[in-house]
Image (cartoon, rainbow, N blue to C red):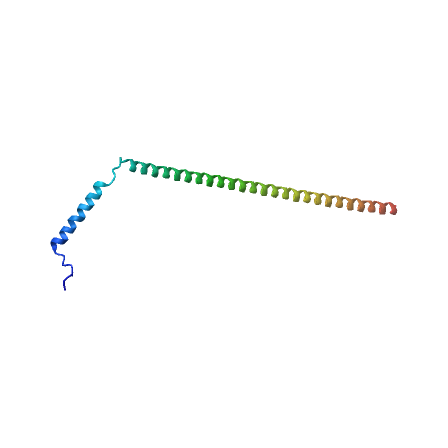
Length: 126
């Protein structure tokens, strides 16, 4: 069965020629790169791109500052933890020294008491 429009080869060829002519006409009437309208659009796009780049640079700067701040806080926390650990170690060492000195003093007192009793017993025996 044939198509109802009965487009023959000549009709199709004529339609293709018309389409090509319309494309060429559209291309010919398109604004040229030095057209004021095109220049204005290009400048607007460049301004948008520059603003976008400035915002990106600002975000990068803020990110870098935030990272530096976090590093500084981490360093401060580490320093505080180290200082606290040193203080705890010194306190333990001082407590150990005090305990050792008390033990030595107690031992010396016991020895002195034992020597006194021994001397008293010897004195009674004579």
